[in-house]
Length: 312
Ligand code: NAD
Ligand code: UDP
Image 1: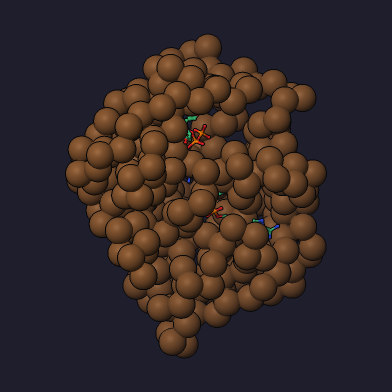
Image 2: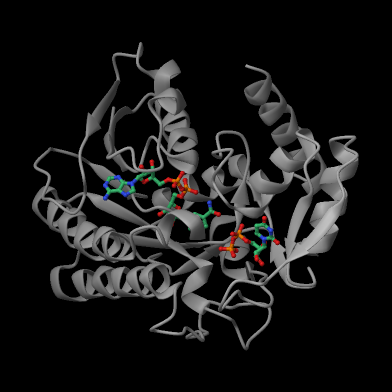
């Protein structure tokens, strides 16, 4: 039985990861400050004696014993990470230093939830891991983008300097049950709007693109990357390479939710990336991993989740 620490474990992706790790008979310590995470996300796991939930902010040191660390703590929605941008950078940077220090002392393997945002508004399409990105260092998204970029720097310096066993995943837009209804991200926004019969708010013309990965597929990628040999450090893109415009996504969701909502247009936020699609050749070759869930099916499941949540 491995002892596995998941920071940000009460969040959207973190709660699915805790569930999966427990199902594989590991001991899981879930650490979260509940900024965007919810106890309800892990409520069903509390009865399992192999699961422990701890309120803790990763910007402060943590002294526990562990074999593996998944470092997910960080708000991921632009609305939430821009709410207190200084805290967002601290979470990424101080959080990485604290968790890497813990990995060094315990000789644990450590996984970093990095992001496609390290590519900024990419000039290379689709995005390959060797691309260094196009990030505005002083814009409203910089607290997140540069925080995550600095975290990657720290991971690779710990790897070179201390031989820490690292895994860095660059996650592309992921969706599924347990996203917050007021999360601000596009999938949850559109589904909640469609189910409530409100206007669907497409920012800009809606011709910007994203590639959406269902959460179960992503978790499979996490587990495979962690299990790979220590030579596989990443950074490795994990995401679904099927690209859609935001307008296409809005139309799909209206149809799937059988909604009468109308599409309206709102101003495009500053520095909103124009297009995004992962090149996943590295994950395909090294992990034999690729997403399985088609967008329509994944969205239908997510609509079903939100329908239940909003009715409760
Ligand atoms: P989320 O907001 O649901 O989860 C983040 C979790 O971290 C929450 O439970 C939150 O309370 C916790 N947290 C925030 N600051 C903390 C702190 N200082 N100390 C302890 N806990 C803290 O978001 P998510 O979508 O589940 O994202 C999880 C990770 O994956 C994040 O690191 C995010 O940057 C990364 N990621 C997600 C996506 C995506 O599309 N969902 C894409 C790229 C990267
Ligand atoms: N978006 C939108 N309407 C919304 C929320 C988001 O049109 O109500 C757009 C947003 O401008 C971006 C895309 O959807 O182009 C994805 O936004 P999200 O916040 O989900 O994630 P991002 O990939 O930008 O971090």
